[in-house]
Length: 465
Ligand code: ARG
Image 1 (cartoon, protein in one colour):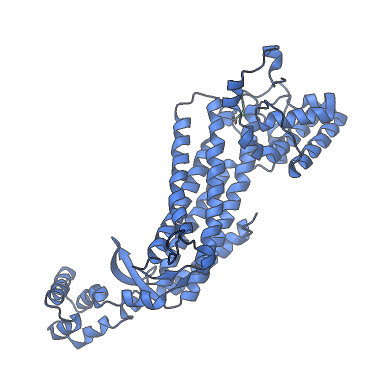
Image 2 (cartoon, rainbow, N blue to C red; image 1 turned 180 degrees about the vertical axis):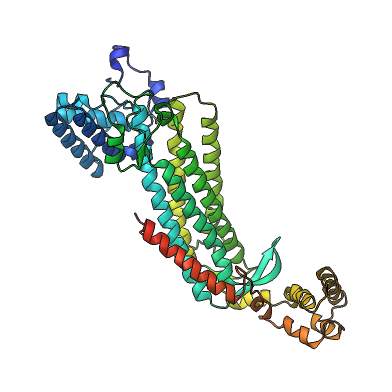
């Protein structure tokens, strides 16, 4: 069997168990098109440097184009024992281009090659995820606008605390996703560095021009240090973190949908197309997408933690351990992309039960802080006001007397204060910037819409790309 190193090892074939354990082709075949793009830039560099003749360069470029077509039409064949996609592409180019093809790997190692491939891949994929997040933000925005003045209880400690507009609640998730978009784009800047030309670890004796190949590949710049270039996988760890954080945000949204769709809350009804049933219980309608958005985030966190552990003890420079970068990254990207599409569909088609939200929010106790703040406005120190209202609430609960009667009878409160307990009043009183009432939420909706539109124009909104 022809390995890439058969000269050094003579006729001895690799042991079957070695191949079985070390082969990465099953998953790194996903880098095929990026490997070909990297190789095309490398060939161009070899020609510019005068290492490969112009004619041979053309033959090699044509062979690489042909391999690309084979990949695109799923016709590229793998041979038994081939270790990785780099081996396959080089073997195929050599088959097609003969002696010219044998020059492909001059001045290059799989170490700078794989790092180049993975950076090209990650750069594109992070953008794709950001676009999907933008799509979900669009859906949240549309649902928030359409929610108008509807309100529901806001919770702390999962106890009803104060009423908030539904739009405000939906946008709370929207803003978290905005930070995810920012994080993905920021991580992408550090991915955007070409390692090509670093060779195995030390650069090359051939007159290669890494700046030139970086530009050909659309990277913003080249590496600064060849040892770092072949061993740096921060970009993978950082991508995994950005995806994990996004996964955690998707999980929180999922958890709320699970709660809200329960009979106990009854705040939302999910569309049939985005719900599942039970194999045994005919009455059931289950929020499986939301549960998996919650559950799968565990797997992303695991991928991140595992990969950081892989990195932590590695001496410079390339070590085969680094091959462990791909599977968690591919998995995190796949799961995140699927989850984002499914969650967007779920939120887009859900029906809010606004009456149920309203009645849950309309308990007079939800306005307790408004009573205290009313006293504050009339000159009572807050701690005293808090204690006056707290005592009224306790009294109302213990003696089963309506709170408004006690408020009306209280010498410092009275009939004017009772108006604060009217259903729907408390949420109107949240007037401070960024707060949960209609005034600040209107502004917030405008800011959020502007941010989403700006991001869409900068990074595109084609979720499918
Ligand atoms: N499959 C390897 C990886 O993903 C490719 C680089 C192999 N380099 C080597 N020196 N064995 O890292």
